[in-house]
Image (cartoon, rainbow, N blue to C red):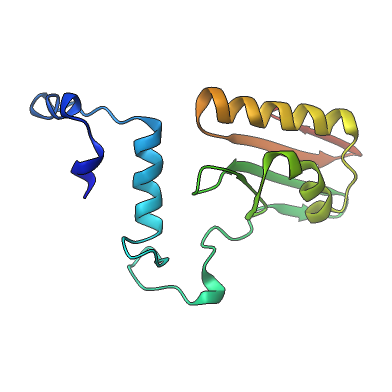
Length: 142
């Protein structure tokens, strides 16, 4: 199945031990691994997930008294991001951060977050951004 993803030009490199994969092809590979060819979600061991376990990414944010941190990454579908394991469109990230953290995201920070997320999606094809609330301030890699 994976050989169908690569163009004829890329196949010429196989003999030399080099294989070129575009970001779009890589997203398709990752999606196929997570979501089997039959469209059903599977865990790392090939076991079919139950309907209530259909989001294998779970919650990875760290929450403490007066603090919150998370790494926002692109969702497996490639059209949104994950905030605390929940699929969220980029324009909704500030409100989702407020919901999961319980801390207000000022408009200026919200605008910077959304702009940087959209830039990463457009220019880099992937999103990875750390966010942290500590000592009354939002900081991160934005």
